[in-house]
Length: 418
Image (cartoon, rainbow, N blue to C red; front, side):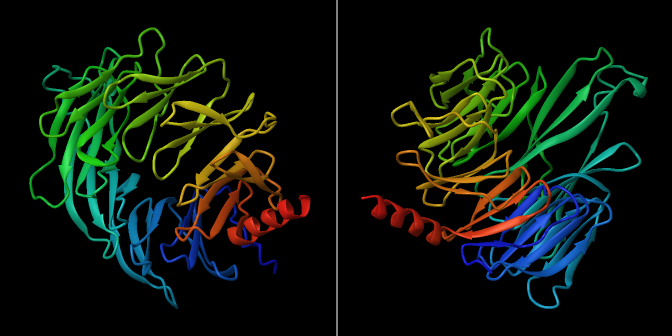
C-alpha cells in the first residue's frame, strides 16, 4: 500500500462525521446508520457497527481509551481494544441532538417524550451515565399567553453548546406563538451544580446561533434572526457589545476565531463581513459573492478562510485586516471542506471535483493537489500530531496521507526547479 496515501474503505452512504482519536491510532467514520473503525497505521478495517436508529454523533474520550456513540435512543461507550465491546450504555428518549464538550468528557443530549416534554441530559462519555437531567415543557408559555389551542403552537430546544472549560452549557428554547411569531429564550446550565438551569434572557426575535466566547466562559455570543450580534455577560445577561446589521441583515451561521476576538458572518446579499468582538467595529467587507461560505480559522485566530465558487479562496489576516488570495486563478469547483494544521502553517481544502489541495498559509502557495477521491470531498481532518491528513468523500471513501511525505515531495520539486 502506498505510504503517502491509504484508502481505508467506504460506508453505505455519505459520511457526516469523521474523527481521529487523540493518540492518532484510530479513525472513525459515521453515516446515517453505521460506524466504521479503522486502524490509522495501516488502514485495516477493525469494526463495522450497525446503528439501527441512526447516528447522532460520536467522540473519542480524552485518553483515546473509549469511543462514545450517540444514537437515536441511547448513548453507548465502546472500549478501544479488542474485542471493542460495549462497556457502558444508557437508554434515552428519541434523541434530536447531541453536543460534546471540548475536553471530550461530556455529551449533552436533547430528546422529546410522548408527553410534550423536552429532556436535556448531560452524560459522561466514559460511563454513559446522565450526570444531570432537566425537563422543559414544550409549551411553557401557554398560561402566560392564555393559549388553549396547542395545535397552533410549537417549540424546540436547540443550539446546546459547552463553554471552553466544559463547565457550563448554553441552550436556546424557541417557540412559535399562535400569531406565527417566533421567540427564543436562552438558558445557562452549570454542569457540576445540582441547581436547575437559569434563564439568561428572553429574546424578542428567534436566535439563529448562540455559543460561549471560545476563551471566556463568562460571555456568550448571540446572533438573532435579523442579523443583530450580541455579546452578553453570563451572570447578569447584560449586553457587553451589540452589532446592528443596519440595512444589510445577516443571519447565516457566523464563524468565530478561536481566540474570541473576531467573528465573520455572511450577509443575505452575498457579502461577508469581519468584526471585532470587543468593539463591534467592521474590519473587512467583501461583496458581490455568490454561494459564499465561511471555511475555518487558524488555531491562533490570526487567519480566517472563506470561499466562493466565483472568486479565489480568501485568507483573511486579522492582524493586518487584509485578505490574501490563496490562488491567482479562481477555482472552478466549490470548496466543500477545509482545515488548518495544528500549528497553523498549512491549510487543506476539499473540492466538489474530488480533489484535496494542501496550501502553505504563510504565502498561499499550493503545495500539493491530491486526486485519490472520485466524489465530492466532504471532510478534511488533520491529526493532532500535525503529521497526518485524513479526508472523506460523498461516496464514503476515506483516505489517510502522511503530510511529511507530501511536504518532502514539494521541497524536492523546488530543489529540482532551481
